Image (cartoon, rainbow, N blue to C red; front, top):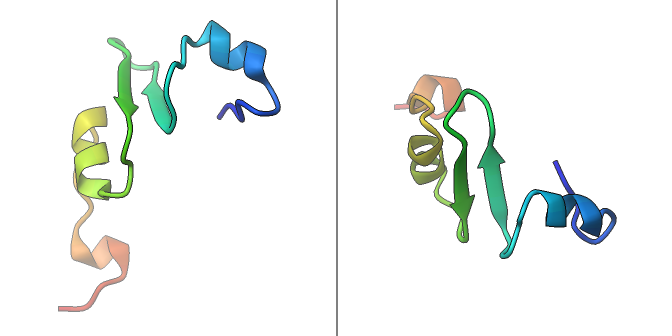
Length: 61
């Protein structure tokens, strides 16, 4: 995790041009999600992660 206010040089090295930004570097290929990160299912899908089921998230049916 990079705090661009505390480590602007790291943000520059990572070529972060907009915030918020989430970068998954491993496994290849790297993936960047830029902008609204509030919809967890959209972010997980973009990163290639499996969706969380309701039981895992603590919701009851």
